[in-house]
Length: 144
Image (cartoon, rainbow, N blue to C red; front, side, top):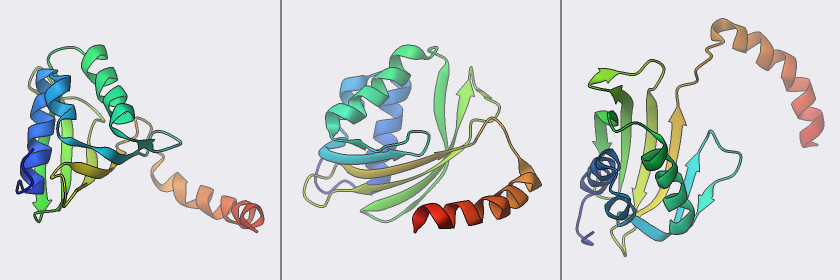
């Protein structure tokens, strides 16, 4: 990555490499000290090697015709938000939408921070509000 590459270019290059299952090209977009927060996991992935492991699981474990499709990307030279979904053979895969935020390092021009939020397969809808209300007293006690 060039240091002058804008964030959208870096991220689009990374997604394209993952879609080609080109792990080396995808990880070339990632800074050595990247912090990658995929909210499906209890802990963030820290460092290029950890992020490589995440990318490798996708690249090695999914069918060749499953790919990321960027629906919208917006931001500036150093940070972007991306709305995306998965396609299976060119058809949107059910419950596969996501929203991601990416920050690019000013020094390396590579991804230094990411946070992914993926659509859940189970959607509780309005039931989530009473559940949150029920959990608030418990969470308050735990946080004290």
